[in-house]
Amino acid sequence: MVMVMLMDISVAVSLVNIGILAVLLAMYARIYRNTKAVFTLGLMFFSSMLVLHNAIAVYGYFAMAHLFADALLPYLVGVHLAELAGIATLLKVTIKPF
Image 1: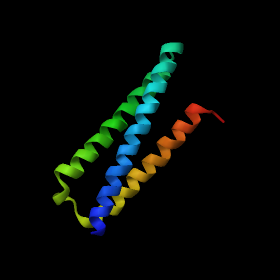
Image 2: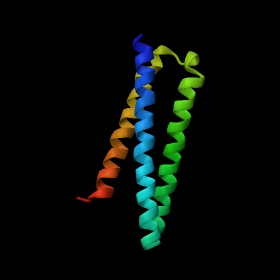
Image 3: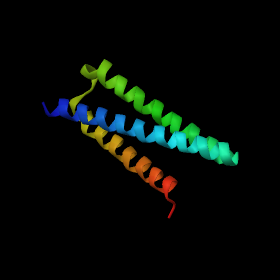
């Protein structure tokens, strides 16, 4: 039961990550359109790869849940929560720099 809950938490956090990354991608596209700054292309690529990572993780949880070792699940939750903290911070400084 606890392991199913951990898998559900990982999926939920991954979906939140995808949502935040979609917002970041839209913002970076607007910035690139206005400035043509090459750095924003790198940020767009980085964000796209993180979206891909999270989409694969969500798919993997549903398609291969029976293959995940129970001992691994707390670490996966930790990885997704750390990613959420990082991209939430990135969104905050993108919206309103210090």
